[in-house]
Amino acid sequence: ENDLTNRIFETSLIDRDTLSDASEVGGAREEHKSTQLDGPEEESDSEYREEERSMPEPPMILHEKSNNNRGHELKPMFHAAVHHNKEVTGMMPDIYDFTAAAFNMIHDMEEHLLGIEMLTSNWALLPFLRPTVHPGTPVDKKPRGPSLELVLRKDVNLINVKNSIYSCIDTVFHCTGVYLAALQQLYTKYFLTKLSAGSDAGNQEVMFYQEALQRHDTQLKIVDRIPESQRLGMFLIDLTPYKDNVRGFTLDRLSTVQELLNSDVMQRTRQLIQKLDNLITVLESHPAALDALYIRLTTADSLPDILRLLENRDVNQIISLYNIIDRFAVPHNEDDRRAFESTHYLVTSVRHAGNVCLRERTEMVEGIERCLERDVAWIQSQVV
Image (cartoon, rainbow, N blue to C red; front, side, top):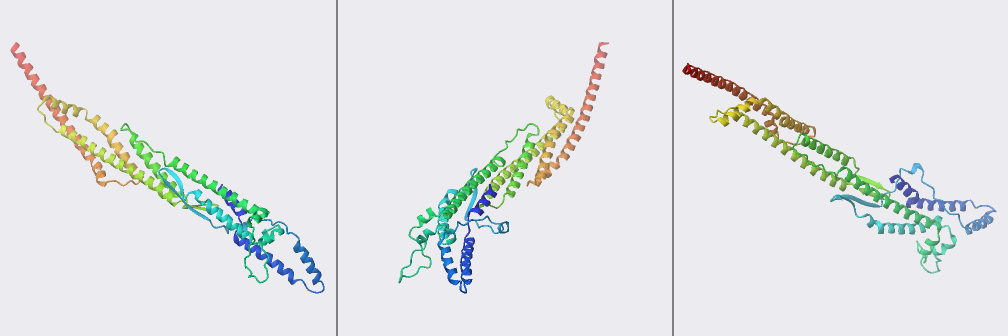
């Protein structure tokens, strides 16, 4: 539609330079004829010229511009800016505000065309264009007839040009509306959809952050590919406000996702450190009560399963989150990262405390067995 609009605009609208050149060519042709009148045939040629001048000229045919002149494009007549606010794409000024300017342009073009004789096919209407100058009155350099509307209604070429301009403006307005609708669809498809945060189960949160950051990265690349301006016939549309607004919304959402990611990583790291500290505290304790002793011995027995669960559920997810941070260059706190990297020392301490607890449990069990053997031997000696 954009190419069709430009082609219609180029073939329908006659710029002032072309019309002026045509007027100069007509004047040069008449001057060339006057220089050829010499000798005894001057009188007959003069009569022939008068007869030719009295005959109506054929309608002027407006040819399409050749490919050699395609480089000289018409300048845009209207400037507008596309903006995006509250998820709605609009134009400033509104497209309907250009109606009055468009009609003024047509009126100016009509007056310009009336000043060129080659575009007036009906010579009977010349008195309305160039009124008779009475003797003794000052001569107007640009005389104008009293009935401009009559000429516009009767002249075929002027009517065709005016209708072409109307058609061109209507087509450009339609293309501009289609272009705005396309920008709105672009925003709805690629920018309006919001991802919902997942639950704490499994790797759903990790996938949420990855999809969200990937989506925002794609959105920023799409914004960069949008041109700064777009030419639609006589409109030059500035897309910078639209790009700035959409980029601002995208960066705000990206910043929100990055903050959630950093907060989640920090919280997971602190929870992991807290769990490891609790394990060390339980394994290194020497309780006197049976309940606390039972907890310590049970923890030491199931320590490999506990560490495996922590590694699969907590450590691996934190590693995955940091991989996402590195992949999308997310700003983060280096202190939290160093704290997470130092957790392997805590894991080593937990394993060491577990081994110590197992040795103490073995010694405790052996001591209990020796006490039981002693008691059994004493009971047997009393029975005998």
